[in-house]
Image 1 (cartoon, rainbow, N blue to C red):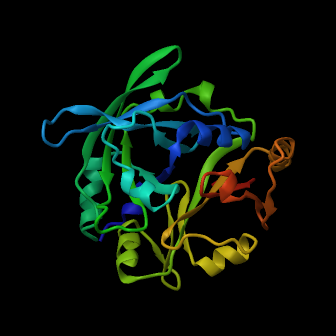
Image 2 (cartoon, rainbow, N blue to C red):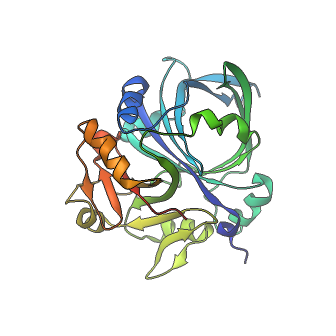
Image 3 (cartoon, rainbow, N blue to C red):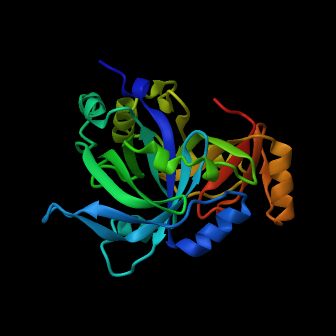
Length: 287
């Protein structure tokens, strides 16, 4: 059988919050330069038309991948993320990039039934002093079958609209999103999903090595041991590793912002309370 992960790279992690402005302020204190607010849109299944959603995003765009904040912008409109907010504010989305969603979908579908066929998405996004249309084609995991998060396999059709050079230099020196960790024990359904994404079988499916970046699974106890005894929500995205230019400069920035941090063997990490529900670990390592 073909290996889907041979064609995928780590694209972004999505953190869903109720107050986008407050979350953006928190991330700017962490040293991320965020893109301007970009209202989201989706396809109305009944009319076939694209329509505004209740939410908007702001992104920390890196040389490889990005971190996305999603929050309420227009209350009262359709909010596709309401179920996730009802569970908790924090990281709910992990996206993997592909060259072609239509070519990738059959490779996923041959391994499991947890993904819907590709759908087209578009919206107007800030670009320089104006706007440009952003287009992408997405494969979404099926929420009814996938409780731990929303997986997205994304084909960027207008990557230049997102990866604007003016947005890619950050006070904390962030360069790339390198690893996303799911806090979960292994179970047959999760194992099947990770096998579909190309998981390595090492004492069970514990990692997905991608063309760029990786997904990992760790238990609550394993994460607590690594991150100072922290208590994390089970069966949920818990940790994002970001490679930086110079770890000493990153720590100096956090010191200047009076943000406390812990240390690991490979870097420094900030508490979920300071990063809207997700451990962010800064390292000097980049794949």
